[in-house]
Length: 224
Image (cartoon, rainbow, N blue to C red; front, top):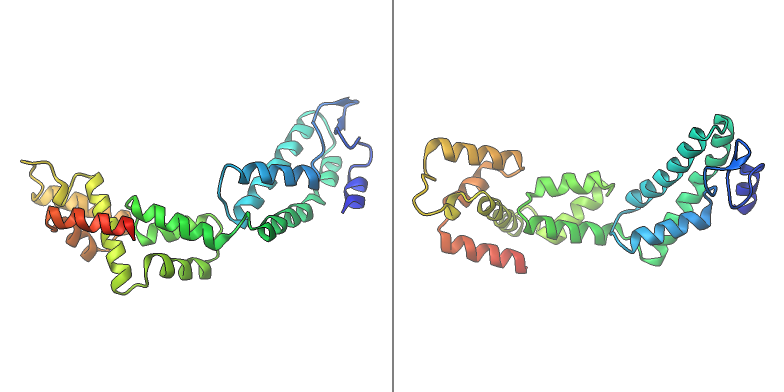
């Protein structure tokens, strides 16, 4: 790998990308700098394999943009950047081997936290897919974390719907004297819950629940 980087960066020092006769684009990325960037990111954020790869790719793209803006020939920039895809993959694999990146653990933690803030199972699934978690893994993690789509899963979904309703001050959480049972108000809340990914039966059950039971269910859901 070191030989590939050296050949790709021929005409540049190992510290600086030489463009236009001056040190203007900063150090040429290599595996060591990409590893340092990965560790710095992981020290602050949880992420997936795909997410970490995107972070490192953006780092390389920023260097390439600076080099191009400084006047470096496009072919020269491409020659330096080309081999870095392999280096990025190796750094990501290393972080996985170290246990610093774990897609299943990330998905489980994120699924629990999102559900407890009122996100539907469908919304959680979309969020994890957008973070690069594979569909098969998303399905198994949701079943394990939130329960299968039977009774246990339905209970978690209802709890999330109640949190959503509480944020909207709707149903059992409507302020005293509010016309929460009005047809227009109810329709708007149901439409909002549908957009958030909740099924009609779940949404109606949440809105029709007794306030004391609703609070109790939220507490049980958040401590599960």
